[in-house]
Length: 314
Ligand code: DGY
Image 1: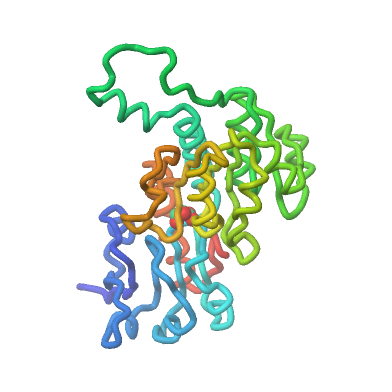
Image 2 (image 1 turned 180 degrees about the vertical axis):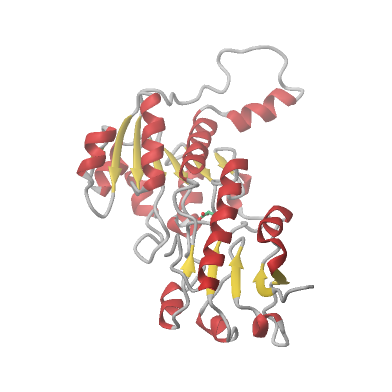
């Protein structure tokens, strides 16, 4: 005997996530067109990737019981609008902290030590002999790291930085004395952090307060040898100001896992600079983390459809 399946709308869900959902669900492709039948039927939305979900879209899903986000950041979802409508929003906090911190270190090392430029050079006909004067980078070990946003991910970055014997400064809305004791990090006012850090790592969520947090003024405070790392969200950085700062060598380099817009238009001037390393939003893109993110997304969905509180809600 067949049993009725529960219609949920997802955005290009991968086979592994479909498999986890099992046969209880009918998966409707994401369709916001005016004639969409998916919106009228869906009881749940899985936001995989970052489709924008706002109040008007929620209003087109009359049976909506949950928005289950695959990922921790929910800046693409109007959480206040969901709350007003009594729709719970789930996310996947915690499971991706380590992999996102790993990626922060990857960008730090890649930008400081010319990994990408060096790779291109090593493959090119210009590499004819070992030359100790070539591609001298900045030493990561023993440098000063400034973390903006000492949340779960920022703390994991601090732990990794300790292994590199870095001095770690942080700036947060609130001072975190426990983290200072446990991780040996030092609180710094925002401008002081920018002035002192060799590496400025953005690990904060995107909120109205962090939008364009790093612009011309802030880049102007940084050392000319400093490297900016953005593993948070693109709009935290004013990209026009960043281009000017990198192009004029006002700062040394940038490592960007996220951009605004994302992706950058193919003719964006940042893409033409050799002192920037750009990755396509890979912060949490590791095998074990992806698996845990999917499991949490599915667990949130099941809980909401049973009428239970979400294990991981916003
Ligand atoms: C997150 O978890 O917020 C990542 O950016 C993927 O969405």
